[in-house]
Length: 280
Image 1 (cartoon, rainbow, N blue to C red):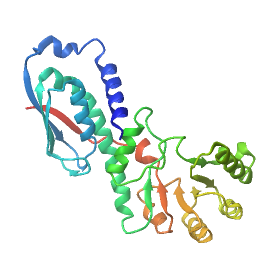
Image 2 (cartoon, rainbow, N blue to C red; image 1 turned 180 degrees about the horizontal axis):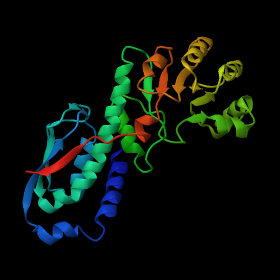
Image 3 (cartoon, helix red, strand yellow; image 1 turned 180 degrees about the vertical axis):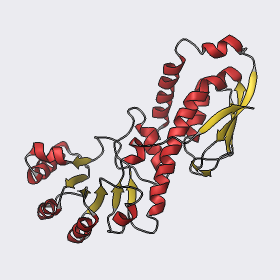
Image 4 (tube, rainbow, N blue to C red; image 1 turned 60 degrees about the vertical axis):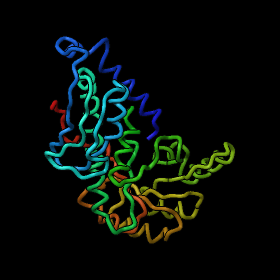
């Protein structure tokens, strides 16, 4: 997680929340009043966002002092205290909602990711996220996936070639999509991996006959067809299962021998973990 990107995000978020002032605090809390608060965990899961929270406190008031008791990636339970923060009461109150918004969502994503990764333990498949992220929060959400034990598929449209069904249709078919892509990479002198989506076994066979890719995505394949595809590919290219993956079937897909399993629900269909920042 790049510090510059995080800092810019925090500054924008503070401006969005603060406007021309925290009038609730200004109305009843003296500037010189100091205090302490604790981050209280209210739900079981995996903690994420502590480092980001420390940056929020620093950006709002560099004089605030934090005592971290539980680091990112640790399991947590109701009643745990993740950290204490001390400083001006006004500064603590300004920080409260932004810190909670970040940590609750990141912890929810990390917890969900951990459930998936734990279910395929002992198998070679790795859990991947997708681009189904909240606009402006992708870098935080993908960091949470990493904290939960998953891997990032790609950060955006710029760091990998991914030829999905619409690319293939617009390009005029699988063969033309691959040919045009390889020509583009050669002309632009870019070294990007190429992944292409296969919608059925016939697509897999056509891709294998053409070559020129790095990974084949088996999109919405059932278990039987996934096994068939993995056997056909026979390790010549990386394989990725995608579409319809749930906690109930993720291990069955991993047992098919695929290299990766991408799960959009890691980031786009998530329940934030319950916690609160309480004055002490």
